[in-house]
Image: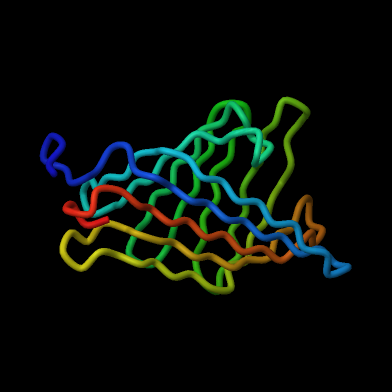
Length: 155
């Protein structure tokens, strides 16, 4: 499907699963099923969706920019965030909320991007990372994003 010369599908089903393990080994798992958009522009794959009360980020929109070997997560709306995930690297950012700003650091341990063979559109992203807030270790995290849509267009 071409959208102004770009490849993509509107109205895809997106499943986002987040798992956070704290210093005591306690895991908190959140799963979000939502509709969103999936498209490719200039070799970069974009996945976007609105957050809900399930994630605690209602009023924010999340955009994943998926490159060949790294991912950038951008949140806008109720919170503002731009976080890069690059395997083996520590990337820092600011997390801006109505209550204040926090400095975040992410060390990506594992990143896998799954693509459809026929269309090269991203079907899944798996990330494992360590999170620091204001220089203090907070948690080990896993983020999985699965994109499903129209089977004839590669999803």
